[in-house]
Image (cartoon, rainbow, N blue to C red; front, side, top):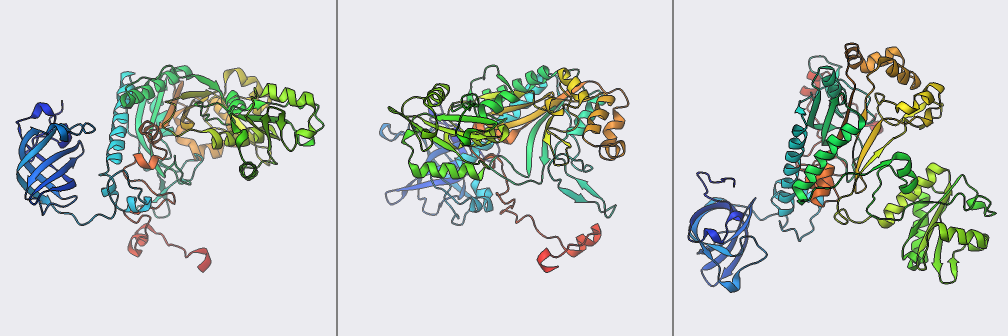
Length: 581
């Protein structure tokens, strides 16, 4: 057991138990709660990171909430009728003989108990107080244990931690860079890394063999529940490995993290192809904790006279027990689907007498029977159908499935899933050029090289893979291209000429002239993994000092203007807002 004794304390508040009775202890902490007992006697709950313990103090009138105390006294058992079974220290109390006030406190801007809902901006403005709450103390401890478990798991597999630079050249990675002006070279800028991608590949060229890092990454993109400007990711790369090897490495790391928090180690993580995920769930990050899977209905309505179903793809989902849904709610769901791009939504209630729907009269008896059979429908269910282009139908029903069925993050356990065999290109732009689904260093699937040579680009799979947990994308990885001729072929398909490639990726391509080993890697979000393991729906709750949804920092006021002297040193001038120009 860790020894927390120092020159100011002998023990932590939450560590004391009945075995410590009759010991003299010195504790330090904050006044959590105070209860008067008679004219002179007071019971005070003293709190530190380990928990709380009850103090019994004679003459405590000047001890207020959040005062910082040092107390010395004897541990004794509470009377049987006053023991608190819900508290780890509930069997004992401290008979205090000496009190020293180390610090006083003004009245707090909000209560620190977890029972009170507090405006998030107010919490973040006083984050140093918010961090005292048991929820935040617990979450940050979970985060530390996750980090430790992941590091241990990677090192058990022969990986070594290598730090990569924070000031780098701007490289295209999909999101906007945060840039830092150079004082030494006015007019030039560093970029803050969106990921260590190119540097970890250079580590492979450098013979590092197995690299990992819990890396800080920064992306200037809109924020949401699972995204911040700056975030931490487990970044890994290995040489002389296949996709299967990487999946084993990362599975071991996330299983170790889960075991460290839950006490149970997840079993083998199942795999699903990208195409199967899209067809069954309408997303490449499926939440497999619940049903309501997308059902293919195109063949059911192949010869239909109902014009709304005369579409390239018809799919549906079944909502068990959903027949009780009101008409107003169904109208709201339809409007929601239209906002996602749907041309419309067909609903059908399954009743004892058959399908109850405004469109039922347009369907033949055989079509209605085939629909009910395909959907495995039962009386009391609700069927929701979208007919459109396949991509649109999958997307809309995938969103609707989550809207109607996704359970809270804490329900249903941990359901990890590997999604593999992503397409190399996700589509074509208006000019007919392919849109890469991943970064341009992703190796095509070896079975699809002929399709790549023929130019059947949308039929080419990549050796890319994602890890999903309870519907959250934890991270992505791929086998990298290390053969110059394959890299030049992919660059050419993407319209990246030799000069542009050298300009954007020259330092990596130059390194690849000197014996690059076959290599592959992966990265997953530590914030996202920690949030799910802590039972939080928002990663801000597991980050010590996050930004708000708008990207502001209420604690420090960032982002802020800088003074003219700093601008002059950097050779910069701030333009007035467009409305004032």
